Amino acid sequence: MKTCFPRIQTLLILSALVAASPGSFAQVKYLVVVGVDGLSPDGILHADAPNFKHLREQGAWTFHARGVMPTSSSPNWASMIMGAGPEQHGVTSNDWETNKFDIAPIAIGSGGIFPTIFGLLREQQPGAIIGVFHDWDGFGRLFERQAVNVIKDTDGPTNAVREAAAFWQDHKATFTFIHLDHVDHAGHEFGHGTPQYYASVGVADQLIGETIAALSSSGMWEQTILIVTADHGGKGKGHGGATMAEIEIPWMITGPGVKAGHEIKSPVSTCDTAATIAYVFKLKPPEVWIGRPVLEAFKSGPH
Image 1: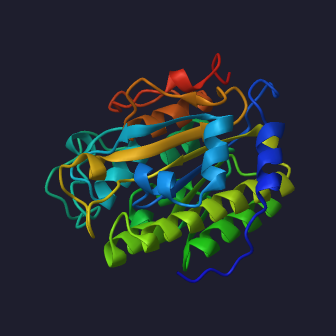
Image 2: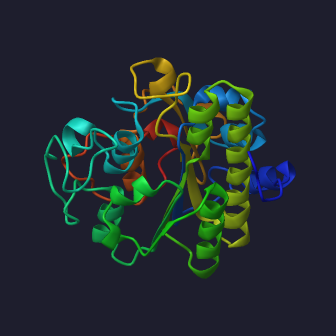
């Protein structure tokens, strides 16, 4: 897989992580999610991935978080940002569109779709600065676009990270979501568990390092919570089925107030990601959400 950026030095990333160790700062101002499509725990364990290792050392994590069924992209990205499952939000396949669905959502938010963390943050903190940089064009239909300040459908994962970095230089964004799609491509083309798949995870690791470096250079890192997770894993050259390899995903969080080197033992669902973000920002979640904040990850709460 072709890459077009320098490898971030491990020492730089480690220094940035240590600088923002739990308890160092009284208040979290920013939150960033990096979602890596098709990233499996197996991929992290077998790839050259020093930044993923440092995230585990400096934050809280689990390799046994679960996505939702079916283990395809749209239902799982939707569940991650909507705090609920397909039974609630109605995104049951990649064929879903706002005007084309098999199951109607149980509730409609202000954006005309099931409420997401983006709309929730906009409603309860109107001055929030929100950015979305997505490598898969399908992600752009899953949230309330009018709630987001900057949306860019990027050409490749490197551009997604670098567009976000440029955004941070101009705006200290309250909430940023970065979607990387290349690992899923490697899984489909070469197969999960192959050298090419692990190499693509290594590229994701480098991009995580670049993300942290950009947050540091923009003066945001010390007050940022970073969540790194995935929509689904995979088996062979596909996903969508009912196997542990497809439904288990990594879930990592680091930043002020987060436990260091802590493996999360309580169950974590992808639906909990939106609820955890709402908890960090002190938002009141919609009653229709079923996700719950991953409280075990925090020393005593970020508030």
